[in-house]
Image 1 (cartoon, one colour):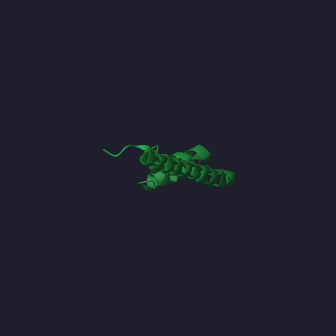
Image 2 (image 1 turned 90 degrees about the horizontal axis):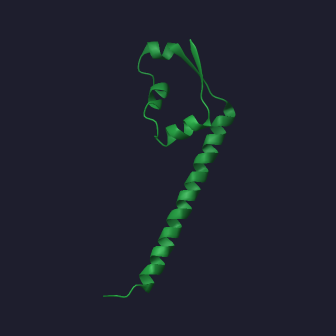
Image 3 (image 1 turned 180 degrees about the vertical axis):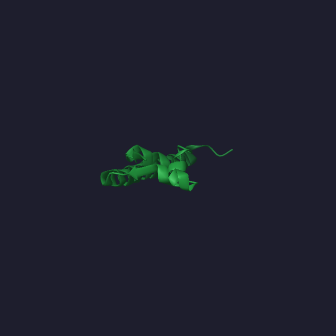
Length: 81
């Protein structure tokens, strides 16, 4: 049996769907795959992953708000043709 230690970057990549092959680890297809690997996850990695995803969500929201604000400002400055 193989022990696989998963850390923060794995969860971030999985949550953002950046690595298609990670599905095989999370959702094994056969009993043989299930019995060959033991997955170990340090608890801090789960919390750190949630924190990183929340920070990214905040940055994305802030960026979207800035774009909207600038777009609205430009609308007021553009001449009407």
